[in-house]
Length: 404
Image 1: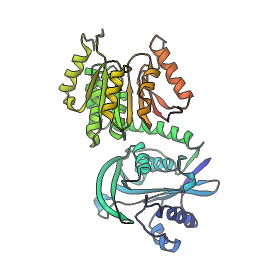
Image 2: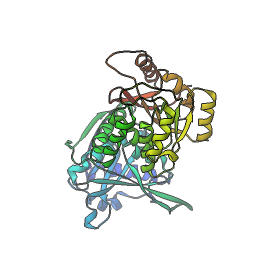
Image 3: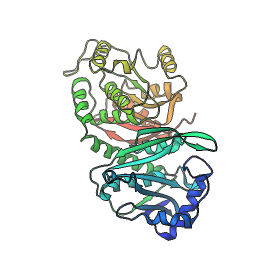
Image 4: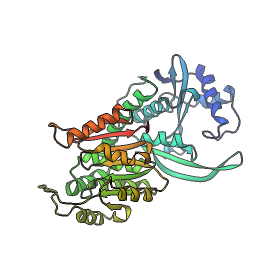
């Protein structure tokens, strides 16, 4: 499917209203309780302009299949740099990357419009939209409980927001080829992760994680930043296999803290000793506990001493998770990556973020070679979507479901 994103014109309004009206009866997307008309929507449409508050349509084979519009967040002048956005997609084109492509275009084009922050107002029970916004770096900035009544049912309103890059050179239109949504989704996700890393370089957490990296981790700083980011935005809980002396654990704990949401962070470490010129230790588990306490995150982490694949460890993880799923897996243990993933795959949420170390290197060795083979096999089976290599040797991807 070829997708063109362009400025909307009045001739598109019939298709725009049809897409909008199709969502009214679902009681998932809009607070309108009755369908609207082209005539009623014309003044609203004319409030937009390409250089201030644009209105875009996504077009496939000369057919409008989705749309996105910008509007004033609040009327006072001080709020001018913040805009509210809404995204709607035709029912038969949902889940194919159209909404994500529109939203990504909004994030990247916002600076050229003088917009530094974007806000989306989403019903709390609209989980698919909340996931879409979270995937592109939006965070929960607010909750308005039970402010809407839809057919007698009280519904929450969630405020999803994100700050935009300071500048970005983007052309006026996006032209992408979507194959069931997967190709464009993977490309956009890779680009979004790179933009995310660039943004964090200007935030205080960058300096904090640089210190954590120097004191406690062999991972690259970019990997720690992504672990922090994933822990902050993921919808599920977090499992780390191979915590070592706590660098990645601390980064994830900071992410959970800054998310403002309750998430279980489970770190598994068998202990032992390591010879290393910078991070050598005679007692890994003792130093792990000490470092978590030193960074004031010990109460945020459930430590399990043992091997990840042992029945007593998997039972402890199951007990801690209850019925909930894992939204982030951090895997930095031995070479048996497939073994560890198989132990916990039934607990992974669809689109669970995965950070797996020791997958790439200039020279193959007894750890990298089997680790890479395991990950390649998971990717080849369609179970894991690759999103690139970061730092020195760390694979980042996302779980795409279990084929059984």
